Length: 175
Image (tube, rainbow, N blue to C red):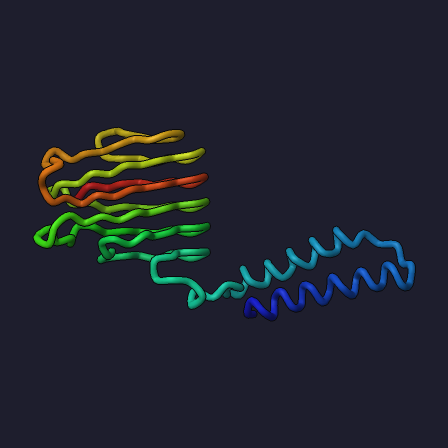
């Protein structure tokens, strides 16, 4: 069931329900019927495992209503996780070309970030009503928390990750 079919059927049934109520003066709770129809159609989606929103509609950096693993994230990109789960593995990052910078935003979702133990890494995590679990016991629930690996310094090439999380969770694992 595609997005167009879902919303088309939903709006059609809503329109028919309103016409029946107004023209034929049949008294029934339109709002409750609309919510019921929506829940039935959502249940069909869950039962058959299809998404109403096709992943083809999003950029490669966006994970929405889905689960995605990024084995080789690209420097300079901004990644988004919305109502989804994203796994980002930075263990194969090559720092010979210079610093590697990336931004990951998570809203109502979960993100797992895997960082190398042997490379310089700096993570700045900003959380709002969320949890950001950084190595070394640093946590952010509301506010900003910064993690810098032992080998990190300002004048060397490093992996710089900016994390923003709202109503979600981010876990950073060091390997």
